[in-house]
Image (cartoon, rainbow, N blue to C red; front, side):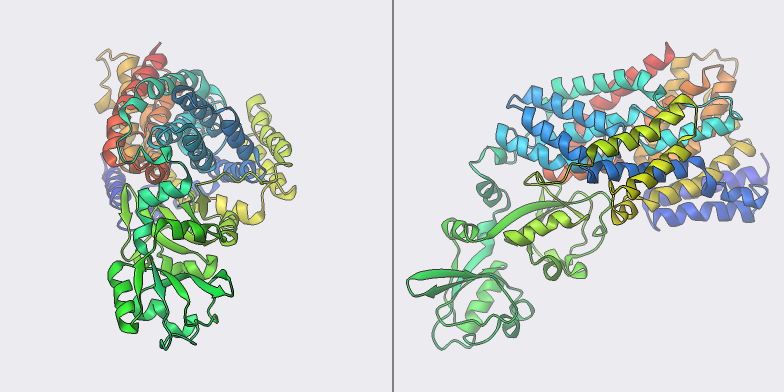
Length: 602
């Protein structure tokens, strides 16, 4: 191998290390690749290193992001969520089947993560109605969305990349059709769903956590799960107190004592009033301040101001709830701008008028320094405040309300959105137009007809993924042009050894799954595309099937929570730990691998 081959190998190794370690942002690593390859002359001419910017897969994927957002905003996904609630019933086995089949079908034409985001509230409602632990329904939801990635060309990013790369490497002689994935993807999904319904759910569920949905109402569930009552105190303002006559802003409870006043009870004649907290509200003698604080901070305030303090009872909390105050459980959306930000950075209380009582992260309850804790995908926030402010959360694209379904959503544009999605898919199926063209046209019509808002379209486009593809496409070219891909294929599949298709597809599946789990499935698809092409030529197996093996391996992301966005999204609401994914995911991975490789080998 010449110097350029070694540069390509070094670039690949360094990029994979940075992808896994995340020492620098993923998109920065990806966009550095074409610069290195062009400067070193590994890819010639230098302009070829920028081929990713004009790649059909990038254009098609950007359009699919917008179309997926259109299906969500127009109410298509909400209608399917209502369908789940309507026909869910109370039998766990039938519920798991219904959730997984519905999610899998929608995930075939929508982003996997967006599908999970839409169905999360509906599944929580079903869990409470049927008295079934959330932990036994959340993992089937997330895994079904991942399995849906095996059904169509547009169902996941690696599929689009591999379809585009096969067409390019074969000189346009071969391609992966829109529904060619479904030939093997449907049986794979059926076997995966059967595994989860019959075996996987039996491995889930623990005492304590699983008792939560069986409680009489949502308030009681949160009180037990998050021990909220231990953080709510009542302070009675005595006559002559220094606080009497001061405003909430002047008292500076948060700055001086790390205490937050959430409600004030005040007697007026024979009636009791509960007043919302405003900066200019004056405190009066006899007022009862309901404050949220850690025990030592509340005691510090009471001692400094000589105020009687008591832990608020559950009955008092219910009284507050009946006067326009509520608590809710919300999760970060897949593309939330809140990720890696703190609540203080976001001015959360100032923007939403709500207090965050705790953060529920992978079965760990974060109660201390909540405002200074950087948020992660999968976090569930326990918020408290006026009902009208909780309702405002529905307007945020960064948060998903988990404790109730948004049943008032306008669904009148749902038929039009489905029609435009069909308009995007049919031309490439019939060979009339490439997906990049029909998808882009349909995405523009989605925006023009109001099926998706301009803001929604902008937020739906995941630039991180697009930059990743743009940056790694020339790396795939370099591996192919320098002969590294061919050398790797020869090493893995020695010519003349009589290796059958089962071995070839099995190795491609396993390597793809490993790379996808440890780094990123889009990067794995770009890197393995030239290897799969060379392997198919040297081994004499069907090239399309070799690419499908890579695609299915890229969707085999069940063993670790960080292997797929869907896993992270269900981790908090389901109360899972890493061992839960390992315990259930290993069996599902084996079932999927055996099914996929066997079918491809026939």
